[in-house]
Amino acid sequence: MPSPAPFRSVTILGAGLIGGSFALALRKFFPELRLSGWDRPETLRAAESAGAIQHSFSGELAPALAHADLVFIALPIGVTIDLLPEILRLAPPTALVTDAGSTKLRICERAEDFLSAHPGPHPLFLPGHPMAGREVSGIAAATADLFQNAPWALISDEPGLPAQQAPRVMAFLHLLERLGARPLWLGAQQHDYAVALSSHLPQLAAVALASFLYDRVDENGLPLTLAGPGLRDTLRLAGSPYSTWRDILLTNRENIASSLDLFARHLDDLRDRLSSRDLETSFTASNELYKLLRNP
Image (tube, rainbow, N blue to C red):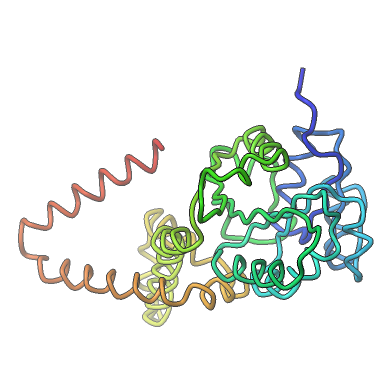
């Protein structure tokens, strides 16, 4: 017998890949939930057709938030930063508001600035980041299984405080576990440093390699005519659009720049060791890391 939903009414702001997948996962595991979406009309029509949401709102935020006890923000980071004060002002004080932004420090600072300047009853804000996604975007790519076995970062700079034990937070943890995600607690700065290495650097490395090869394709299609599945696997991330990454790069620039500097030095070191058997140590380390990623 499935356990009851920890929330009754969920509003999802942004019905794209992440928001749509969250809605589909909720429909799968908590079919009794009332699911609403807020987005552009054409996106909402697609989300309704996909069975992701039952109620649609476009334009003003207030009607979409009025009866929600869970608000899930799956908007671009810049839009999230702009709208967060209004969301915290309009959502019911009894609600939990959480987001899926790929960088956290700027979002956390925005929330703290609003809450400190506007004392009074406000919804509980729990910054988050599901480490799940695909190289394509939009509701058409959404799937109910996107978060299966995926880490889901929850942000608190003071782990273990009673705020984390609030009933709404515990209910959300239960919800994530039912979706198959693996929640973990991190500080905002710690999170942004880690994703610069584990997510943003791989994306830019794929973009750099793809653009490098693109500029070197000759009239016979070489070297791409000799490309096998290895190159396609390596360049999967290169299919991601810049619109998805623009705000991520802008809001985590220092961590990403530092990661690129360190990686460039490592490439220089590999080049210097091309004729040396010392390169075997790098292959051994990469093989071990690959095993860890395959078996988390």
